[in-house]
Image (cartoon, rainbow, N blue to C red; front, side, top):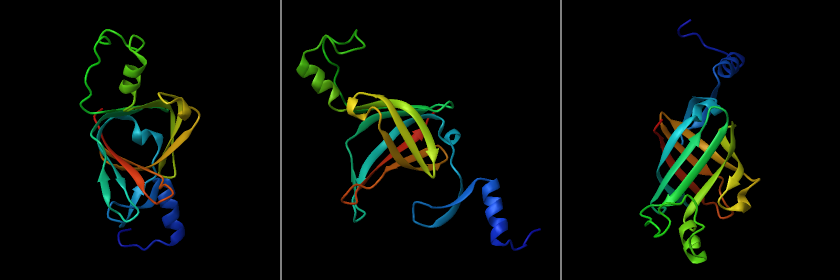
Length: 176
């Protein structure tokens, strides 16, 4: 009934039934949110920007990038991020690979690219990217964990803080 007070057991049951969990919003205020699942992330997102947040809270904008991340309903993901404003490489216009280029041209072309794909799963407010293939072969077999904040079609992925307390934050917008 309206105005009825619920005891803590009733609240826990209702939260579990409706997948509700307490979380902090962007201003640090406690709000109720539903428990995230893989289905919540399904879609194609374009990058809006990235930044590094230092331990003292100051944010430093990253380089301007063209980025896209895809999460599929069957649990696959892929991401490609390149430095914005890249120039076409002469001689590579008709090729999907870079094999016709010199070693230096290949290195320069790939140096500002982040690309990996694999499976993903959402657990405890984070997305786990299980990397199965990547431009950087050292990433294969690793799992990258990112905290999730999803508000409508706006997605923010945040890295785990590093040794000095800084963390990365990438903002995305769902386009499909």
